[in-house]
Amino acid sequence: MANFTAADVKRLRDLTGSGMMAVKNALTEADGDFEKATELLRLKGAKDVGRRAERTAANGLVAEHFANSGDGALLELNCETDFVAKNAQFIELAQRLVEFAAANGVTDAAGLLTTEIEPGKTVQALIEENSAKIGEKLELRRFAHFQGAYVASYLHKSDPSLPPTTGVLVELDSENAEVAKDVAQQIAAMAPKYLTREEIPAEAIEKERALAELESRRVPNRVSRCRIRSISAVPNRWGERRRRRVRGTRRRP
Image (cartoon, rainbow, N blue to C red):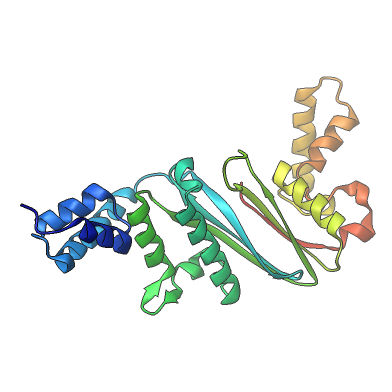
C-alpha cells in the first residue's frame, strides 16, 4: 500500500511541475519519502533534458519589452511544438526573460544564458528547469536590445491562435511612428539583407537583375526594381531625408 496521500501528490506536482503519473511513481519508489521523491523527479528531469538536447526546437514565440519609446527589446524562445508555444508557462518564461535581459544590460543571447537570474541559477539553468517541467526542448535563440531616440517593434502572428513568431525591432534617430512601421513591416515581409539600396554591392544588384531576367524574358526594369527593393529595408522612394533616420533592425526569420 502506498505511503502517501492525494495531498502529497498535489504538493509534489505544485513543487516540481511534473505530471501526475511521474509524481505517483516517484512517491511509490521513495516509499512515501517526500524529499527522496523530489530528488528522484529532479534527476529524471535532468536526464530527460539531456535526451531532448538532440531534438529540434522549430516552434516558439517572440516576446517584447519596452521601458519607454526609446528603449525596447525582443527575445526569441523556441520549443518543439505549437501546443507548447501557446502554453501559459512557456509564454510567462519568455516574458520574464526579455524583461530581465533588458533591465540588466545583456547584449546578446549567449551573454544572457550565462547570466544569473536567481542566486546560484543562470538563465540556461532556468530554461532547462522549465524544459523538464514542460516536457519539451526549450532553446533561447535570439535577443536584441535597442536604446536610442525612438525604438519601435512589429510582431507578426503566423496563426491567430498562436503567439507572434516573427518580430522586428527598429531604431530611428527621431520619433516617427509611420516610418518605423513601414520599415518594420518591410523587414518582416522581405527579410532584406541590406538597410538601403546604397549599401547593396554591385554584384548583388547584378545577381537580382539576372534572376529577374529568368522570371521574365521581357526583362522589364520594373521587375528588376522590385527585386532590388525586396533586399533592402528602406525603400528608395522615401528619399534621402527619411532614409537617414533609420539606424538599425533585427528580425526573427
